[in-house]
Image 1 (spheres, one colour):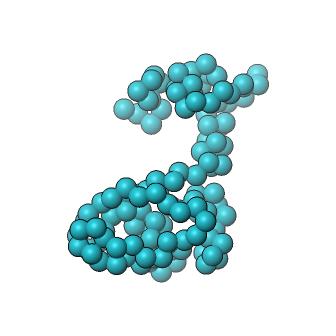
Image 2 (cartoon, rainbow, N blue to C red):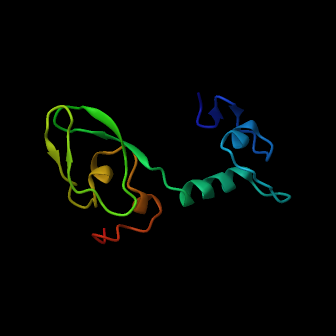
Length: 116
């Protein structure tokens, strides 16, 4: 399945597209407005809150919900019990070992608790 397809259809760039409707969004496009630009804007204003953390010690991966009000500095692997810490230059374990960066980094705001 391509990046522009979902189970409900493919993205054709129109307001009535099943892809946009499948997101539960009601979007009125002005004449000439590019739907893909609007979708990109939505994706940078609404952060993803789930990330898959992968342990660098044993490779175990687990989906976790990211906190929105603080950085998570430590995470214990459910399989090998290794305690993960952020790598140098990263604000949290999600930025170092996650499939998705933390919400403040996604929003390009940086981390308020550690100023990363």
